[in-house]
Length: 157
Image (cartoon, rainbow, N blue to C red; front, side):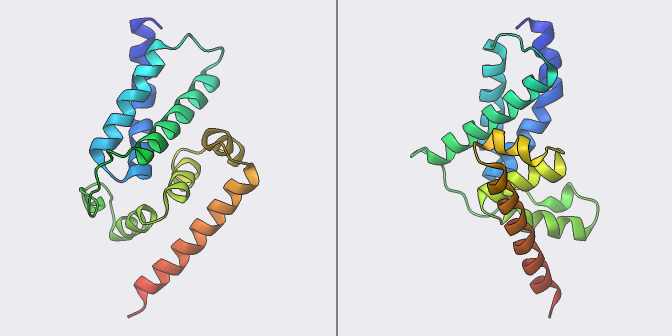
């Protein structure tokens, strides 16, 4: 990949990969590591046939890097989120929803992020996460159910 093409690709994907990794790992430093590893692999990759194939490849590599990091015996265990959502989100309702999404299990968090924030279809998420489309649909359904339950519990005094 040429330097010019890499710079353009980096501008297109860096934020998306970081947000995906952060939603998966709940840790800024680890998300930055995943972003750097993903972009480094992109730099050494041969040119892609289409932009869609490139985008799919980047998401797939980012998800795999997140999984690799979660399995690592050296993974640093951290407490609560190191950054709060209040600074990044406009309303308290958005902040509360963000906190609830971040409390979901990793596979649910990643599926919700890719579907609702990045606009990926269930089939694309399934390919990126190495799962069947029906499995991704189940993850999304269970995530929505957990969110609904948790948000109702938070509303009631």
